[in-house]
Amino acid sequence: MRSISVLLIAGSTCRSEAAVQLLAFTSAHVRTFGYVNDVDPGLQAMTKTLRDELGDAGFETAYNLGLQLPLDQAVALALDVLDRAESSPSEAAISTSSTVSG
Image (cartoon, rainbow, N blue to C red; front, side, top):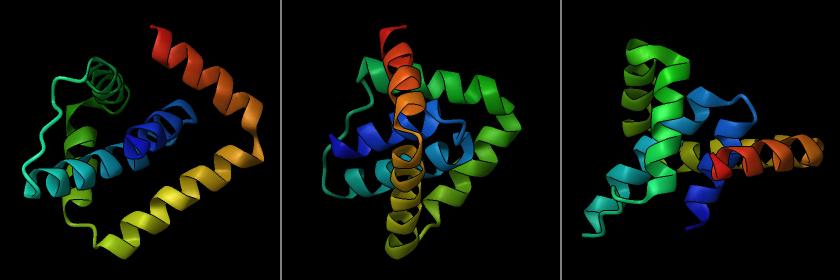
């Protein structure tokens, strides 16, 4: 579930492309191990929000980039998202709570 938290943080701190890339990376690798969580309502809502923000073409581009990310780059991207959120925690907390609640 930590990966979903990073996605929420990325999406709520105007890092939409990073959120979509991490979503794609996570989806691809989670399925490798036989676990599929496409029915998570929070994840579905975040995916819709990201698609609305980026448009279909932008979302697909970011998603395809995420599918191709090597593990070390995905980890670096996730750490960058978390580092940026830590540098302005009140903004991330406010944005995440509003994203989660509706």
